[in-house]
Image (tube, rainbow, N blue to C red; front, side, top):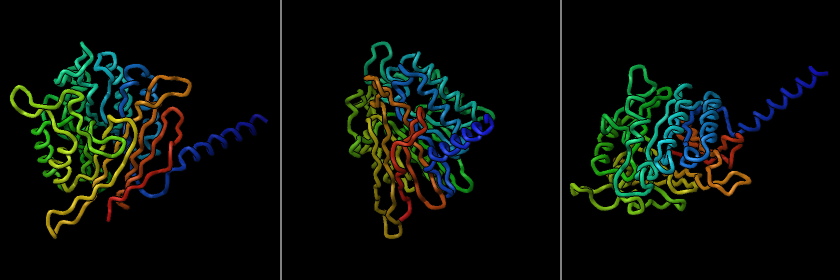
Length: 335
């Protein structure tokens, strides 16, 4: 009798697993996990970010995960205890051999003593817990390069999937003009790679590019007379529009999700019109059932790339329940 019950239980678990991952299909794909703003997790709900990382590790092979991309606002207030949580959580990925990239958000550069924006990029704790040596070291899982060889504020990651080559360009909040120029150079030098651009502040939930630098003190000029930063429209014009191998822009910051196709006309008759997908992902205002506190609800996004079909699929998944939030969204890179 016990043996029969055990067999039935195993069968039920197996069927449940099939239902939970019914979004998988037989077409060749690999996944990039989009990890939206974790600010409330690192500051108030650390167990949730640990569960997110555990979920990623558990599904590494099933989803063929090649990279995890964080969208910024790693912390909520740039406090040391929150960076300690972030440090511990990303070590879960490191120990499992899963590559990842991070960018900082507006909350990560607040004045940590006064908890407000003062027009300066307070990245001391970022550099303490995520130094360049955490990535660029002998035998590392990481490959790429840095704008400033001593800082992780702006850097790119290289990875290949079979014969397909990719580059993830991670840019600071409100990228400075010199940073955009550097990024353009790196992307041009890697013309055979498809590029995913990541920066924190880019789209709102209606799909409009943001012009909100004044809200975190990055508008105007610095003491040297240079722009403190550029808004999303300028990033689009100076970098996205002129770089033919950029295929998508990923961002967080504004709560909600949005994905849109942008068609960019060729510069001449010989250059075809191309597509770029701009994708917003942010769940920071989501509340756990039975609570009025904002957390993020353990939601993340699975970006499935089908290289042979030139297609992208997007799914929102809860790391707490394993359930998908909606049907898979399909984006077509080809004509």
